[in-house]
Image (cartoon, rainbow, N blue to C red):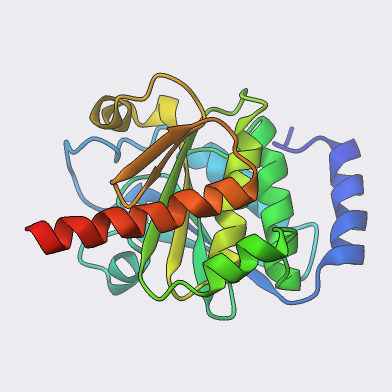
Length: 232
C-alpha cells in the first residue's frame, strides 16, 4: 500500500493536469553518507519521505524527483543550505527557497501540494501590499516555521512563508520544520506552541498571522539587524 490513497491520487492527477504549468523538481536529501552524532541527522523517516515524493511525481509529468545522499562538503548541500534530514527542496527555474525538513504529512501534505502548484504557475495569492514588500527586499531573509502535521493552524503560516520565497527567490528562503523530528531545535528556540515563526534568528512570533502582518515581521527583522550592526 502506498503513502497516498487511490482516491487522493485520482484527485491529484486531475488537479495537477489542470493547474501545473512549468516543471517542478523536488530535491530530496533523505540519508547521510557520513557517520555523525549531530542532532538533526538521524533521518528516521527517510523511506517515508522518499516513497511519498516518488508517488507524487508519478501523478504528473511536470513533477520530477532527484534523490541525494547528504554529504557536508557537497556543493549542492552548501548551495541549498541543507543542515538537517530529511530535507525536501522544491525548485523551478531560479527558485529554490521552499524547503521542508521532516515528513510533510497530515495537514502539511496539503501545503506541499499547493506549494507545487504555486511554484509551477509562478504565482501566489499574497495580497498586493505583501507582494510589494517582499519583492522590494534586497537582503537575505531566512524564515523558519516550526509546525506539527496535526496542527490545523500551521499550514497557513507555512504557505505564507513559502509564497514569500516564490515572490522573492533571490533573497527569501523559507523552511517548514516538523518539530517532533528535530527536538534539538525545540530546545534551541524554546518552542512551546505551533506554529512558531523565527525570522533571521532575531524575530519570533506565534500563531498564523495574515500575510500583511507577517510581512511586517519580515521588515522588522531587518530593522533589528540594522540596529544591531550599528551598535556592534
